[in-house]
Image (tube, rainbow, N blue to C red):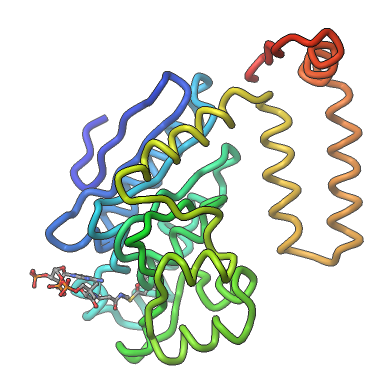
Length: 259
Ligand code: CO8
């Protein structure tokens, strides 16, 4: 499929890579880009060969936010009546395969929110994160006020949302927003290596792990633990569990089914 605002490729046959591609606008997330992103995510989700997806931008910007030019004329009827945000921004949340954000440069506003919708973030040492919406007279609108405090705690989330300041990659790693920081020129190598590792695991276990970790943010602890237990038990019905454990006992590499 031909896309205008993103680039799509596969890596090592099992990893899908989506690159946001509006370089002149620092990958500002226009409505058309978000539609394409949703289409590409759904296509990788449906592709049985793909086990993990990497979402990235350019060296200068993962994404500098929602497209301010497009938003400038929105009315309440546009954003609320047409359910624009839910419609086009939350497709990524329905994807059951892991999505890794490989972030270099600016990840601001909707760009930071998009990165936080991914399953984990690997940051280049030049990455800068922030929720600067307050400077535009608005607040984050794609989950930033909810996901940021869960990731970095209330104090830092308030600091970022109220002052609109940016934090660099080191601060983001200390705060727990990103899983690792790597030199800029190693960003894609690192993200692809992680994605290849994940895509080599048993698909059902990967899906279950993602679902369970997400549960940790969506309900009481006891419910999350019970959900995890049920999926843990269910995985003993899979061939991958037999293969993984037999391989360990026989001191050989496992051959997972990948489906
Ligand atoms: N939207 C549209 N265009 C943008 C955006 C953006 N978010 N960010 C940058 N651009 C454009 C600039 O206008 C400029 O275009 P041109 O060359 O035509 O003038 C080009 O990208 C390059 O930008 P700069 O010249 O400003 O580059 P600098 O290196 O000087 O500065 C910054 C980089 C600091 C990133 C700066 O561009 C900036 O502050 N950008 C805006 C950041 C921002 O406020 N982001 C939040 C936007 S609001 C939001 O994301 C709400 C999300 C809600 C989700 C739901 C949506 C409905």
